[in-house]
Image (tube, rainbow, N blue to C red; front, side, top):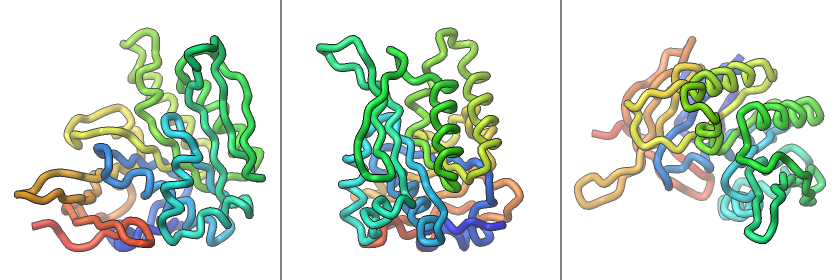
Length: 247
């Protein structure tokens, strides 16, 4: 079964969309459109009554909501209808406090807090929280932003790759289609999550001549014939649009 992403011009590159219940990695430098990609993916599902969960480990949910609301994507209505949920699992250590807080935007669009461990969120803790939300709200589409926030939490660096592999492997058991966002700047700098994910999409943002160029490239897509060329990306009122091959 193919899952439409909602990214104009993208699904044609991957035989009609993602394969159901698989894990995909979307990587790239700042400003390339990773958050917009993730939100369009969730909102496409909301149109067909698939509940989507956006898990943020860096940015506050309200900032993401404010930014995406600049597009004509009808985000607010899907939040109110409980088709798009947000969970903030990032650390909330205040300078005047010794406690961390886990901030949640509920389906009723109210913000609540719950104490979590007084440290950066570990892969195991993040997975446990996500699994609870997926089961409670019957989540079908999941976005985790950003994988980079939990990548370096292992106390023993030698265990980092094993911990990340275990995290991705467990995500595959959740029964939903997952997009992992990662702050990577070099598509040839191979990481465990690239090998473990079913697909890898890289969003480029670079200086070409005297102009900044945004582009998208499908690096890997298991079980799918896909376009490997770098294609230009533009932002319009509906979000990201993938178009012509970059010459």
